[in-house]
Image (cartoon, rainbow, N blue to C red; front, side, top):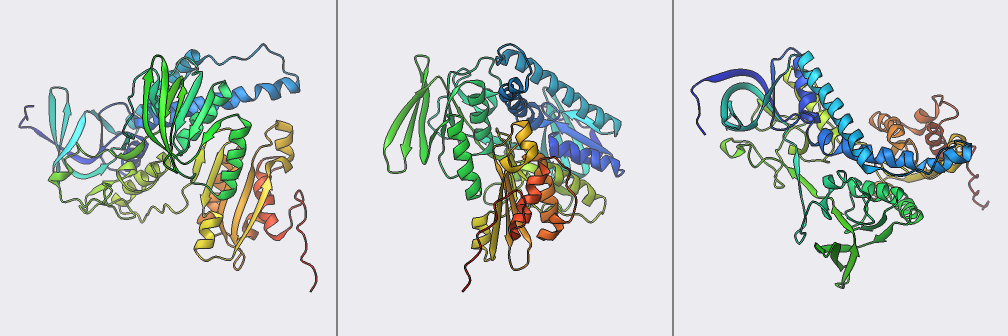
Length: 475
């Protein structure tokens, strides 16, 4: 590598073109800064090109595939439905290309300069960018680290491209696996299990720890997994996975120390995301890192070096695009002197399985541990008229509140449209809403929204489509 003598002067440099990076770049450009966005692969990052978008193509396909029986019942006539994964891959690639082109166009329209290559800090004001045999030096005034994360996997797995797969590879398959073994408890694992069971695979889901849900959601989830004939193995740690003679052998250690082996046609594991920082040259800077390896930032995204910022998977918190996007916008606005901060207390969490799961705020168990006087209400989706006519009757909405103040503490839901409906819950939680704040507005009828309304009304026993609460006997 030969370093040239010419150094280019830059205003704002954003390292990483994923959701957080390109949002930060465009927002900073809108606020009058000259922005250079450095990306070593494709704009959109892992989310658009390998993760969120490809996986959601599959979850959407499975949800539509599941509707076929209901549509036939309604009178829609067509031949036997089949899952053609090769055609689905073409559709997926087309949508990824369209979305990536859209991001590129937005950057260009906002005057964001895009530089291809791998960036690393040489000092607190200088970055080197390597692209093949080319190496460019930039002096910068401010920089945003948006390098994302990398998946790390348990030991003992002999990965290959055919049968022992990482989570991204399973969404590249062109043939339906006959027997799919899924290892993990995160949303990616649950989505994979749901998708392929709906499409016709025999699925085994291995849980190495408890699910991160409210107890009511966990109970209903296990009921749904059983309904979809997904075999669930709990409290088991992966020891080895390998292909043998065209089959996959998976060795597990149970909680009691017992070792068991299961066999399938394919195995997939969801890795743990860790910050993608090793090649960034942070050892040349006086930037503070947390014990887990994340960059330490304040609520604006500023690091210990005042003109360097960090967002997304480079910082602690959930590995979600929604977090990175919010942090990216906030960092750009803080640079411009605006008063902003990022509060991750009410991050909406979503699992796009069938039916979808979404939640925000405290679980019932967390609220009790924090000392609240807890009241809960659950409204089953089957009580909703619109759910009945659409055939989407599975699930419920649960609301957790403080009975002393009537403040809503958490909202948990499973059912069609949960990922959209949770936005209303997040808005209420952010505003410290009480139950009357949810009850006062008018909700469209008929719609799934009414399930949230009736769950809140149920806190006081006022929900019309729920059985009345038993009255306490007179004393």
